[in-house]
Image (cartoon, rainbow, N blue to C red):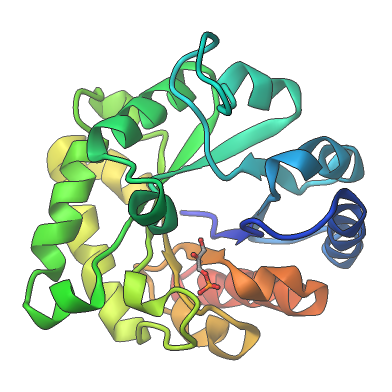
Length: 260
Ligand code: 13P
């Protein structure tokens, strides 16, 4: 029932020419992806070029960040209408790197999620605990706080239109992924909260992605968990062969795991 989603987050990497080449290779390797939606999130400078490459293909474009205002005196920021103009259908909100490095607050993230929905862009709300929080038994408290704050003030219908990503901070860029069981436990908890905040039906339709050291070697096992509806891939999305393999595994494992 939930089509798996495979998202590549290139982070702050690559020239326009490199982005064009990478997107072309991914597009050509995923001409007719079956049973999986694929989204690429390049840096802002490469969005227009990658949009041209993806146009007419089933792959979608996403941005890594946005401002919540449509326009104004916000030096250095990019608005949702600007992202829509360049072809973005998705936007990440609340990535842990931005929470940590840019001191993004839950309130700002909430405004971004709301603004994205107003402009018809699907927000991918990211939540996740640090290693310390996990050690202290605060995993569920942390993600619950981030989820409730990120979705504050949204109607149940609006909540139904988001994508959620669980990215444990200790798993990002470390090579240590959460085990499928660890991720599935958190995803199940998040779905229960979504059900409370929207409805059981809406929560059942929301895709919850896992992110953190996803690679071709662990994608099968992660996607085979019924509660994992896809992946948010950082480092491994910069390698076309690896990302294509991950997308295909996400589709295949997702299809069997979800009893289609
Ligand atoms: P890595 O896949 O490099 O661990 O990064 C995950 C991530 O932060 C995706 O948004």
